[in-house]
Every structure is written in structure tokens, then in C-alpha cells.
Length: 170
Image 1 (cartoon, one colour):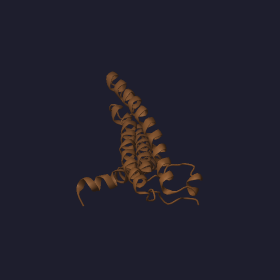
Image 2 (image 1 turned 135 degrees about the vertical axis):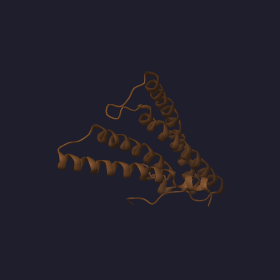
Image 3 (image 1 turned 180 degrees about the vertical axis):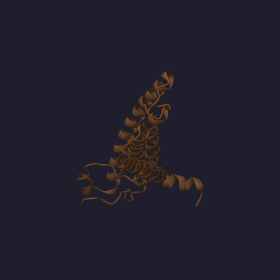
Image 4 (image 1 turned 90 degrees about the vertical axis):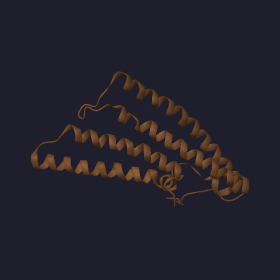
């Protein structure tokens, strides 16, 4: 399997694992420092906060990829494959439009932060690195929505069942 295919299949999984491990290790170190030495640092809190923000936005893209985001799909049980594909395409088009607008405005925030040189309180690094979580998340969502369009258009054309993830509740 090629490297690009591996990245496409596992990018969110690897990124989520990286940020989750960073969050857990930093939080554990900070708890130990606080309990054993009665001392904690500002940088630890900031790392945990920003890792959590990245987790949320990358997780949102992973949910789009796996079609695991929250939705009401009662109607989907009663319609055939072609109307179901059309409804999924319609929903993805709406999400695509929202993601494009949000991507534009999230970059605006990053550019303003870069222009004024804002830095984090504890780490004293440019906030741009942390504010980029939002545009990165929306960019990943847009990429996954494009892939979803292709998959659903094929299902619509062929009349085959659309991709659906296992349901949590049935």
C-alpha cells in the first residue's frame, strides 16, 4: 500500500493519537507535580488546552470521514439506495458550504493574530500555531466531504447502498 494511501486512510487517527498522548502525558506530569511538589506550571495547562482543541477539530474531520457525526436518520430506514444517496449528498453539500465559510473566517482570525504578533501567556509562542487548529480541522473536513461526494455519487449512479457506519443505537 502506498504512502499517500496510508496517509489518506489514517491521517486523522495518527493525529488524534499524537494529540491524545500529548494531552494525557502532560496532564499526568502536571498532576504529579501539583500533588508531590505543590507546584504546577502555566505551560502544562496551555499544552493540554491546545492539544484538546486540536483533538476536537481533527475529531470532527474524522467523524465526517466515517460518517459518524450526529444526525437524525429515521427517514433513511424507509427509502431506497438512490434517494438515500441523494439525501446524503444534499446534507454533505450543506456541510460543505458551512465548512467553506468557516474556513474563510477561521483564516481571518489566524491572519489577525499573525499581524499583531500575539503570543500565548505561558509558552510565549505565537498563537498562530494554536489558532491553526480550526482551519486545519475545516480543511480536513472539506477534503473528507469531497471524498464523500465521490463515494455517494458513485452509489447514486450505480444504485448501490451508500456508505454508512455502524450505528451506536438502533
